[in-house]
Amino acid sequence: MCRILFSLGKPPRDILLDFVQVSRRDRTMGWSHGSGWGALWTRPGSYGLYKSIRPIWEDYVEPPDGYILYILHSRLASVGEPTLENTHPIVRGRYAIAHNGTIDRERYKAALREEGVEVGELDGSTDSELLLKAIIALGGDETAVRKAAKLAKPYLDPQEPVLNFVFVDLAGLAIFYTYRGSEHPHFVPVEKDGIIASEPLGQREGWKPLENGKTVVVKF
View 1 (cartoon, rainbow, N blue to C red):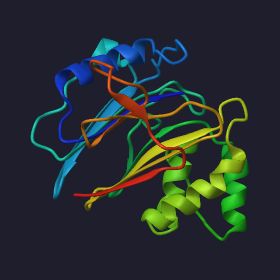
View 2 (cartoon, helix red, strand yellow):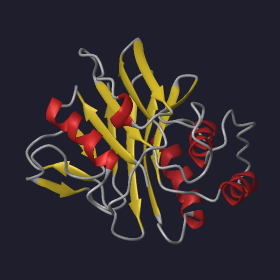
View 3 (spheres, one colour):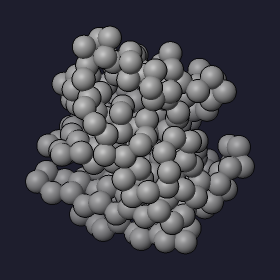
C-alpha cells in the first residue's frame, strides 16, 4: 500500500521529514514505498506539482510555503509501472487524486459501464486514474466520490480490502475518503485539525484512527 499525507496549510517540517522515513520503511507493515512519489500544493487560482519515479528518500524536495492544501504520496506500485503518468498525485484537467489501495481495474471499469459511466481512455495504466475519471464522470463532487467508491468496493484486493484517497477539484474542493475492510486505518492528530496521514508522524503521540467510512470535505 502507498503512503498519503494530507494537510491544510504546510505541514510542520518534522512531519514532512517523518513522512519520508515511513515511506522508506513504514511502521505498519514494515514495507518500503519506493515506486516514485509526488506532491501537490494548491490555493485559489494556482497549484504546483512535483513528481518523481525515484524513491522519496532519494529525491525529496520540500514543498513551498504559502499554499492552503498540501498532499504528499509515496507509491508502492500494485497496478501500473513506475512511470510519471502513474505517479501520484495524478492530475487530469482541474482534478487530482492520490490513492491508497488496489482495485481490480477491468472489473471496476465493467461495473462503471453497467451504470452508464463512461471514463474514456486512460493516460496511464493505474486503477487510481480510473477511479479519478469515474469521479469526474459522475459529477466531481462529494456525491460522485461516494458513488465511485461504492462501485469500487466489491473489486478491492481481497488480501488488502482498503480504499483511501484524496480527490481534489483545484477550483476549491478537497475530499478525503477512507474505507477499510480490515484494520489499516489512516490517522489524524488529536489536538490539530487539518492533517490526515497513513500513520502517525512527527512525535507520533496524540494521533487517533480516522473513523472507518469517513468522508472529510474541505472547501478552500
